[in-house]
Image 1 (tube, rainbow, N blue to C red):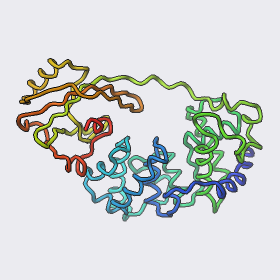
Image 2 (spheres, rainbow, N blue to C red):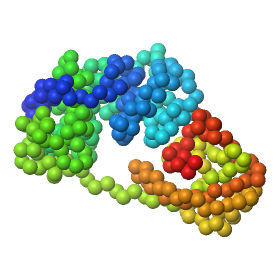
Image 3 (tube, rainbow, N blue to C red):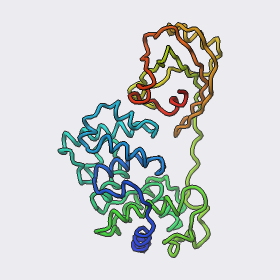
Length: 342
């Protein structure tokens, strides 16, 4: 297998030099900026990340500025990007780097892995891209490319497959071009050997050695086991308004969307009478209530199916924080799932 991997190095580097996309994080050698990009790119499309990346670095240009910022400010800048645990871990890790590493990312795979939110893949990506170390970063793109090159029918979700690919990749990493090699594998998986639809084998620099292509197996490989169906949760969302202010509350410190602000809600679809009963239970005095829009939001493992009521309150009930439009826009981070009701 090592020989198979050796044959891909030179063609990939040549292809990447000519075909790499012009992306903002490829214009820097700053380990901090590269780390931010890698965290943002986890489970998120490149096009969605670009503007967030630039805005984030504008507000938090260094490890120290990020570490010193209030968590709410970090979450607000992350608002809309999703998977908010990434932002919380980024913030925690920045504080560790400030306090224990003199505000410099450690140039060590093992030390990077100790930081909050940095697993084996991200540590490998930072090690190779930012520090030029011969450490592979094996994600879904890389697994798909290599399983096709080898015509490997094993499930790519098998940890043993990932470990084996990483070990063999490490042995062929080109010293002096580690950053380019890591990114070339990622780029090929993102742009040619794509996750959805037919791969662009006619434009692939590895078609000469790809066993799946040569044996017409690209529709069968990679072997990706079917995902479990997402759980559906029904909710009733309350848009409580009083004058020009809207009621929000903070979510718990743990769990889905932890520590973000939200609109009040109740489990299940409530009828208008049930909604009035809910308002009474929470001591909310109102002068009007009307059924409003319905929305759906899809998370990785859960779908929220939401109905809503627009309620005009006669006073700002205690138990909620009442924010005006400026505060909602500039201060308080609401998840997209609920912000869409505004």
